[in-house]
Image 1 (cartoon, rainbow, N blue to C red):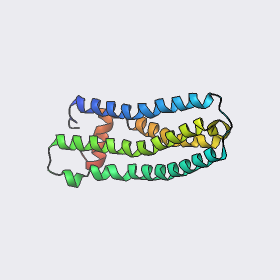
Image 2: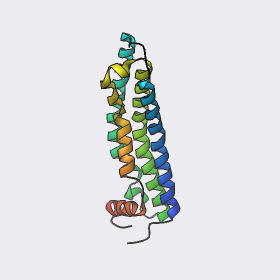
Image 3: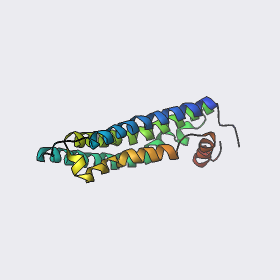
Image 4: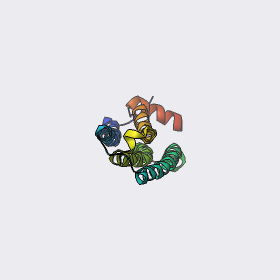
Length: 165
């Protein structure tokens, strides 16, 4: 197995991925706290707004998850990188990782804002179905943890993509 590259590249990718997971996690904790506070009964207009935001979130989540499975492979394309030095391949892999996480982060933020609106409007404590908007942050965390960069994972990823590392 060939050498992957500097440990700094792996460390940088880990820090970026942790950072992209930390913000939404903290946001979700704050929403949980806010939802536990007493709120006035939800008005019909608040419920309607949260329903509309939830539908938009669902569409964005499906699009983001689908794009996160397709777009990073286009960023890291062996055909585009053929003949380039290893450093360029590593940078393309870093970019592919950031793009995947970013595509998952967009619906995550919409889901969290929807939950925040539902908490402030008194909808979340009384209509638990809207907690499902935390599904995309859960997907972000699962994907982030499952793909957390390590030297071994990245070497295996290179081997799967191009046949060698």
